[in-house]
Image 1: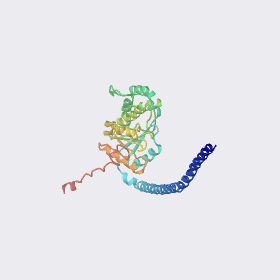
Image 2 (image 1 turned 90 degrees about the horizontal axis):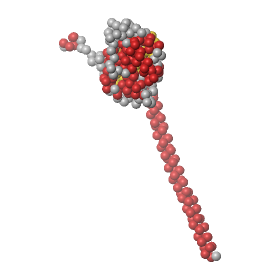
Image 3 (image 1 turned 135 degrees about the vertical axis):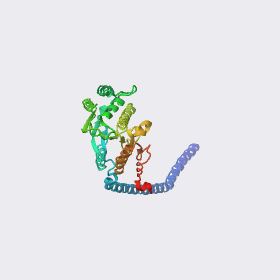
Image 4 (image 1 turned 30 degrees about the horizontal axis):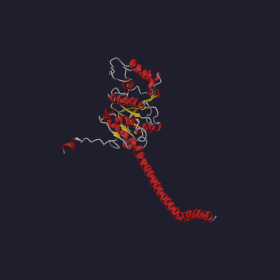
Length: 324
């Protein structure tokens, strides 16, 4: 009986000691832990306030910069594209807002807008490749020869470019008599629509990229189709600029990124990934001006750029300056 009581008391004492230890430990740790949490929370709140203030300041600066450039845009681009006709090409998923804003700046630069070609989603549907190949083969003028390795999109790009573009100022604004039914045929096939008179050929082209990167199993083929079209427009005219935002079109899977990653295309076709800001719209005009001079570049803030804007053209000295 004594042994049982002894063991019982010992067990109770042990559990009592554990309980007291837990209570004391909790009491002793509670205040330091709470203070630590409070201090951490205060530091995080201060850091958040600082970041918010920095963000507000950056937004204010950006707004001021945009307002400043917008006010000066007409002066910045004046006469840069005098005598040039510009074709607008809108891809599926391209930003209407970017296109409309750029249209106005192109006019301020002295360019004439030849018209707009709007590619339908079906144009990039792999199921349409057979139709596209058949149309290109059927509608191509006599004397146009496609390379044996040409894809359906290579053929379509070459045919559309011959219809829409020219390097000859005397031919600008006139239709190509050799390709009279091309746009009608592609329209009848629900592959594109037109606005204005794009058949009256342009000397330059601006192609607006889809604002979402290509994804899925057909992504590479779809991007290559538009790269092929951009390259064809560039080859048939004085130059082409592909534009779309840095966050999407210049990101992996985007059309701007695809052009920059294509060694051959990047040597000839320019890209600008800032059509969403006023300065970027000025840069597009400068990139077109550079294209007229036979050069190309990749401009903006995204991956693969060479600079934000093309270098200013070198002034040609006057005879009096050259002789002095």
